Image (cartoon, rainbow, N blue to C red; front, side, top):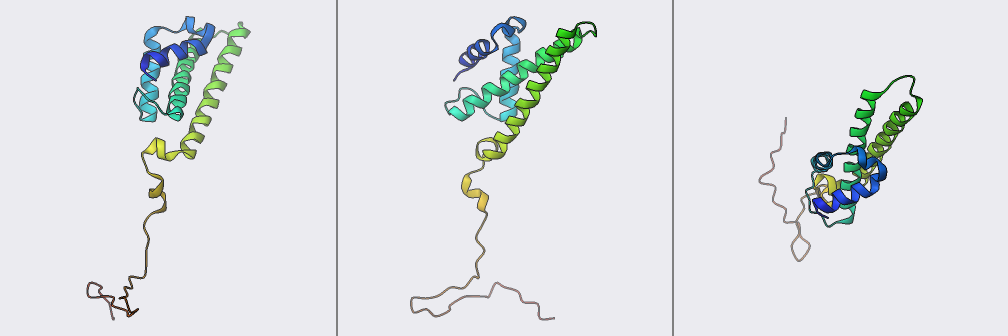
Length: 145
């Protein structure tokens, strides 16, 4: 998925809300999503495509949210409802993103799955082919106090 593909997809998903969003808003939202996830476009992994799209969409909704906040008036109930719904969508998106980061830290932190288990700590015993203990403890300091 390229920058243009993601912009088109976001425009389609926002439907009539896209009329309130400028072209540079899409670029800013995508840029913020890339900074937040640590990924850069183009991406080919389905998981990364999904989350870049969802985070960019969340940032676009946040832009609409802040714009609605500046226009909020007590006597306009419908605008108040819109403002409330934008906030709820943002909270839901943030919770889903946190869960995805917890479920897939290998993709968000760049840590391989084998690194989760740490290192093996053994007894340092070494045996030869006949089973005799040939462990060398010359590098071990023993405090006999």
